[in-house]
Amino acid sequence: MEIWRKYTQSFSIIVMFMIGAPLGAIIKKGGMGVLMVISIAFFIVMYVMTILGEKWGREGLVSVGAGMWAANLILLPVGLFFLYQARNDSSLLEFDFWRKLMARLRRNKM
Image (cartoon, rainbow, N blue to C red; front, side, top):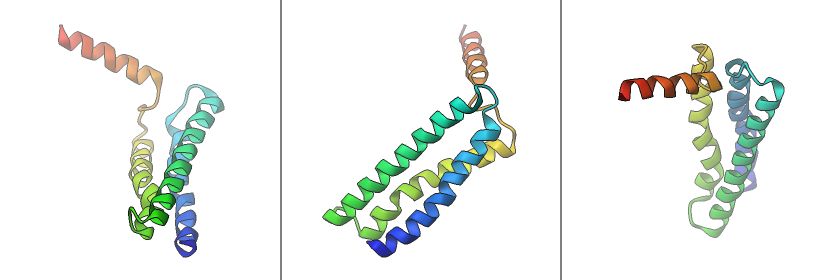
């Protein structure tokens, strides 16, 4: 388990960078406060999933390797999605985007 931990913790730095760096480019309104809250939320999710996977591996519910890598493999697509959105200069995480989307959906419904 300790051997897997060395690799998974190193890779989790890359995954968290892939989540955090694009957030700075995507979220333009709200300042540092919004970025910090979202980043801390992702860190807590990563931490809980890592502890859960480690516990499941120790108890034998899943293999040790799968349990240790689960958090990274689950959050890797999220990081890749954020990188894609930042590269395309998306406004996905801005409040105005969702407000306009809801207004457009209401207009199309009627």
